[in-house]
Amino acid sequence: MKKGRNELLEEEEKILAPYAVGSRNPGEREYPEPEHPYRLPFQRDRDRIIHSHAFKRLEYKTQVFVYSEGDHFRNRLTHTLEVAGISKTISKVLGLNEDLSETIALAHDLGHSPFGHAGQEALSELMRGKGGFEHNKQSLRVVQKLERRYPDFPGLNLCGETLLGIMKHGGDYETSDLSDVRRDTGPSLEAMVVDSSDEITYSAHDLEDGLESGLLTLSDVKELKVWKRIEDSLPKTNPSDKDSISRSAGRILLNLMVSDLIDSIDSRLQEYSIHSREDVSFAFQNQKKLVQFSEGFQIEFKELKSYLFGKLYRHPEVSRMSERGKETIFLLFKHFESHPESIPESYRNREEEEGRMRIICDYIAGMTDRFAIEKLKREGILWFPY
Image 1: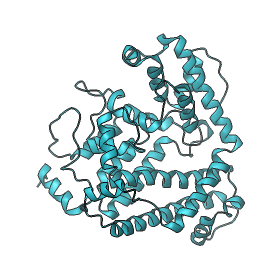
Image 2: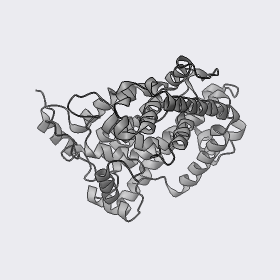
Image 3: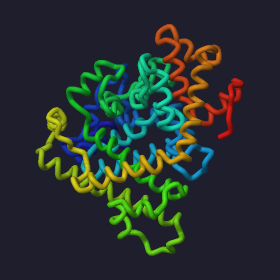
Image 4: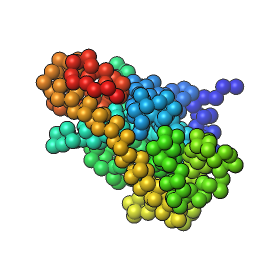
């Protein structure tokens, strides 16, 4: 017998912990819509995100290595899928709403610029004093305004709890009502789990990609405290088989981090007597962090992040790629300022309302690395090989 909406809701309520966000209280959509007969609210949000143009473009947006460096390095899409998987795993074990966690994870980088963090730095510099640019805020802008899939409303019209989860760092977001709610109630546990899953995921896969690319060396990595734990679990293999070691190391590190985080969250939920969504908000307001590693692992994780920052993200080869990406964005931005006719009409239609700088920023932020490079060539702007 098929299950209707009520049966699905009842099944969910039997599984979810009392501090989870249930599908009966998903937060209002800005534009009222009838409920779906067999898809719960966060499932609908997830599907809308997956079918969006912004999600499809993540495949050709840089994580650390631009797409031309190789087919097997992570890109923004594979990173997003890994964050979604980790978020679901943690949420399932802790009785949280997997659908909400997955949805937030799938949306968390929709506003990321091309060329990774170098692209964000470039747009942030160009938009200084003109409204700024930050990819988490841009992700919210994408799902509320920039996506155009529905004739009845702009954006994707997602649930309130989904939008609050996308507001990763809180702060001054464009939608003031949501900002007030985010400051007053704080993020859901599901949103906090996604935030930590993001850090876990990129730390593990950047270490793996760095080793596999040869930009990181095993001799350096072995100096890390966390490597001692990884080494104990490495399969006995040929020491010269560096690819096998790097892939195994990434997998083992991921498991170590996820396991520690789950145990730590579970302990904190008990320590702070968290029994409801209201308790989660109270803990947030009193600056009690519910989602973080154990004290010992925090030290190791901080050392790992510092190592990746110094040895990989600031590596001369990565810096070379980053500078080319930044230069591409600077050239495109200046070109569009003086040649607005090169901007698609769908963006130009908003110029009177939002100003030329913002629509240029929106257009470039939505580009893939590949499209940005091709646009340079098509517009006849100075171009250099990647």
